[in-house]
Length: 247
Length: 353
Image (cartoon, rainbow over all chains, first blue to last red; front, side, top):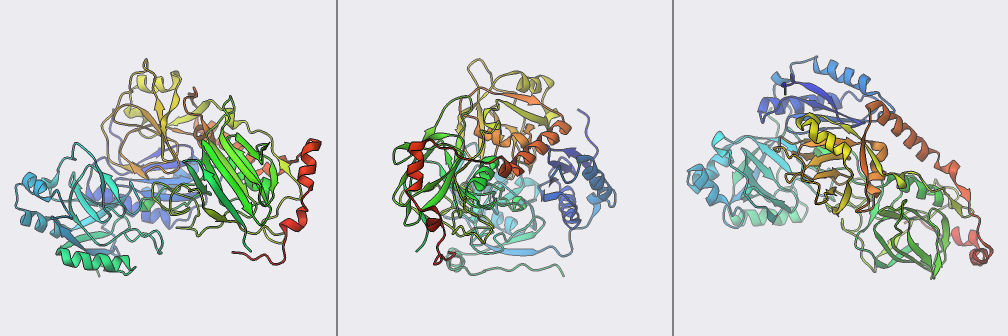
């Protein structure tokens, strides 16, 4: 099958158009999807109902009785050709989060296994993970569930060959150079190395979701007592961390 | 005094639903909402509710319900189920006044060529619970909305909003009925190829159009897995790719080669390859397919899909004109008239909850 030229625009069902920026996990491709998503959302085109980005693509959902597929695709193609999306700098106003995380012990039962696979000590593993500057590649799978990337190449770890029935909210699990941060109890086939007391989703308190695609994240290793104290504050509805901006 | 619908007993999959919450897919939450939006709209017409008022969605089986103190106009829509009030059969798609103390019993789906899966119980005034993230609808997978984000339990009392002549909710003056809709008998589910269809071989795609399928028991508000007969081998399964946004109606091919139709509570993103997408006009029809009922997929063009959607929406928007007064047999009429309808429905002391 011939490779399409990216970006490419494709019909998806009778009320969706998919814009794809590439076919690999690549920060430039991911950034292009986020930048295009942001540009699309401020257009406020009649008939467009929802725009949602993922790792390398953006879905535009529309009402086909208010805007025709061809008219919408023309507008999308015009917007696509207005910039080199694969070369845009990350949003200068993106939010930067420093999230506390308790590695190993009860919080990250798979850390020793991960360290062994990396050929490192547990301490080195924690250090490399917490010092990696990660981006929210997308939120998906479940509310507030954030896929963060990319970790150094050696973290291209396989998924487990079984699924753990449930890991607690805040768990950080790794595979395929990514870290997934759960906001709800979730089954996973990824290896869990840490847990943050920060919850990216609250069903009762606005704005409900704290992380957004494109946010930047690093982790700060904390001990279990600090984890418990912060988790208690989160339970009381207190905000334990605020994002900064690069400027 | 407050209006309540009391749940005396309830089936295993009864939830509060409305039209769901749009706009949160980017944060990992799909819209959710009623599996059958046509049935949602029918009920709103029959009991004089607003289009997005919350209702009970009953998968396969309903339960026993009773009103306390106030008489309540109710209507049942969607898949017809065995139902009665104090032992007297109740017609589907008709408004009906449930008097205090009377017990509405909604049993199993009635099988047949117009059979379905999801029935809906509407109450004039609408179910009133605290909305979560902009909707009262229960998103079971996310644990959001409804009562604690879960299926309803026996013993729950649901507050009902006051219908009032001067609000947007006008209770019916008399019992109304709607004709049986055509979509409940649909056994041809129309689809479009999508962005990933060409990853599948021509032979695999043709097979989806040529064979007869049925939904398996592994179906819920998130996804519906097809049942393959022993003479139907698994489909070609492709490697999982990068996650893209997915939508209602997408047919994804799981790792074991079984086509699975994604519905309201689908994951907002997914890496399983998707072979095709069910057209919007057939979302209610596919959701209502009885488990095990044979059906086929039919390929249409984008223009045909949009035209079908235009007709579908027009039908929903003109439901009010399609409603007719109920003509009851004499033995039912005296039952209806032993209640003073107007006094019962409007009360000066009635407060919004």
